[in-house]
Image 1 (cartoon, each protein chain N blue to C red):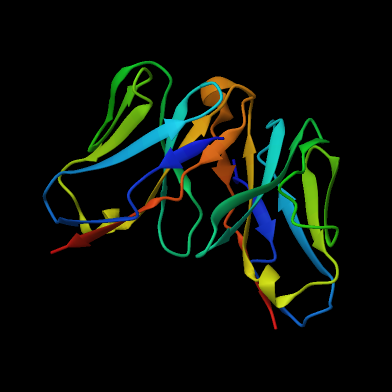
Image 2: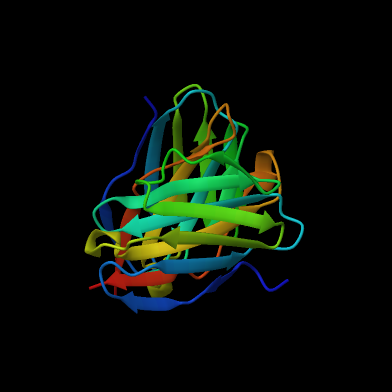
Length: 115
Length: 109
């Protein structure tokens, strides 16, 4: 399998612009997770989906962030408008189910820089 | 609240053994994971423990004591490529993964 695929790998944008991050989970996985990682705050869960339905979005920082999963093979995380404090690495991960199948497999991440 | 504690940083010598500890307090328990993350890369799965005891995988072993809320990751015959951060994560009663802040392991020649 190709693993979790994320695009773009790097994004540099200016404050106020809209940013869209994309993720393709591993085929057959039922859960998808969006994380943000910074040196200061470590790995933070933003939102996760189970069978394409958002289950917990309590980690989404504010209304500027939104996530969708229109089908089992695609998800987006959108930031509008972006701010310099959104600069971080954004990881998408997917997992199969419960117990040890909850092992999450991470994509390579998108390094976002907001100037 | 839910809490996972790991040392922030550890240093060890190439060829030696190092033990990275993790203690947790969570609402329920459905397993504990260890992940490795090299600088600039994504976390990758190392091990999963749900029963007490030691699980061995080559140079890496992971131990769990549920009664003590404690786990450790043991790395033997350290190699320079083992320099990375090691993340402990616990699956709580709602099957949500609670992440520790990670331990940065520095290997010296």
